[in-house]
Image 1 (tube, rainbow, N blue to C red):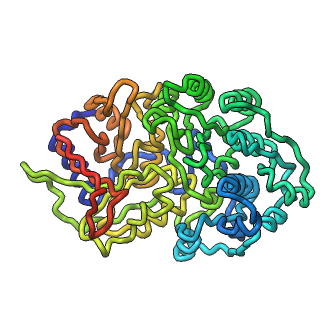
Image 2 (cartoon, rainbow, N blue to C red):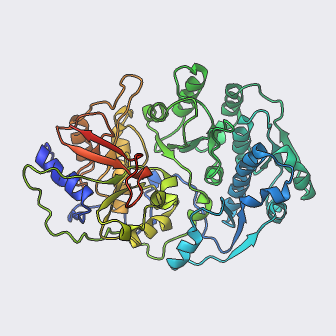
Image 3 (cartoon, rainbow, N blue to C red):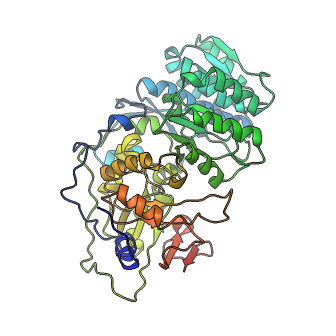
Length: 502
């Protein structure tokens, strides 16, 4: 049964429920295909590598690179960060044993897990050479990248993940040789540009790679360097590229389209877009092939994926202390939302350091969350559920189980069905959708109310949805939104972004 949503109904479901952190209603009588086990994934969506539970972890802080490589310059350290996480992925694929600490200001997730009753023994290692020697016997050789052609890092990761080869820089070779590992491939001088390199990899390596997990890791030093979650894509044997979705880079986006066309759904593009294109262009090109995008950036996913929460029952959001949930006529309801919850980096850093500061704010905040956490970091999601306060409401970040522009999908129903399963599994009752198309529109495509009705028919258990980002009309509903990425509790700075939509 379907019905149209009028202005008052929409205000009741989104502005009050989402903005004022009201306890989501439960839809009894709606049968779910998922058994009451938070860790269970339906076979058709079971696409990620299954990590074992860690028994003991060796923790290494990347601040010690200089001790092992005293002559390394900034670019050398930059490359070492990438090769170290690739190494971590190869070793943790067998069993999670390496934990990499990215600086002293990183979130202490091992400490958080301990407070949650999950205690994994940890040994600290300060010598990267010793770390390599400890696990080198589990590898089948090594492959050398070309420091003058940084796209060889991505090709080497793909190749190494398939052959169980360690990816190294030339400076690392003396240490690796001491372990007895043999050189398998040397990529120095192999290709002249990125398209040539990725075309070769597509022809020779892609057929053996995962058809559900691919990554676009930008390697434009010094402007960008996606390295933090390479351990996850290594374990999944992902095909790795760095291609632009911009129309001015025709050779690149045509190759990107060719690669995406060979992927299977459900599937997603991890990493982030190239420095020469734009977020909207990259997400749009993936959406056209039915793929979602993950703005990743969570380190140690090869460990998080193996850590299981103590309580494996379905999570349930906590009740709001509000009792009066009735929307009054001629009133405007305001929702304060943290809108980047689809990205794993904002989950990893506790919503940009704002989560847990409820004592310093006296107003409700709605926090976006990525429901794919149920598969790739279930104990992380359970931590948020366990520590949710009355002033916290959790909703599904754009645009369901992965960031995408649903109206661009060849078959939107597939993505909506998958998102419904993951949202139910995580007790997320309000999704946030966006639909950009910068190729034809300077703002979001106005596909409402048809998209809203279509989505609500597919997401029968949701209460409503947040639609649009900015600069568009939505059924004449007034929405005031603050982007909390730059929000300082108690102090409103000039960096606060406020958008009034009329």
